[in-house]
Length: 87
Image (tube, rainbow, N blue to C red; front, side):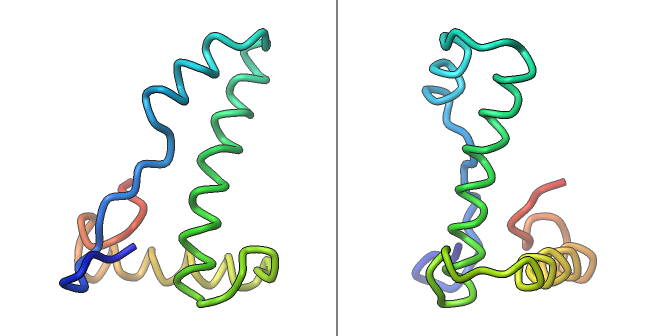
């Protein structure tokens, strides 16, 4: 995701409210983990689709892999703050 100046913004993959809603849900710990992962993954897939300029439904596993490779290269070349994923 980029702002109006073309700089990367820090997307939030799971809000505090969403996390609290998951905590309050009648789910087991593994189900809560998977729910958080799924919500976060949906956000990331939207970012990848937007970056590719295609609907999320058209993403292929190869495009997702390529996006992760690209984000990893940005992180290595320009630092963590320039990448989408901050790990």
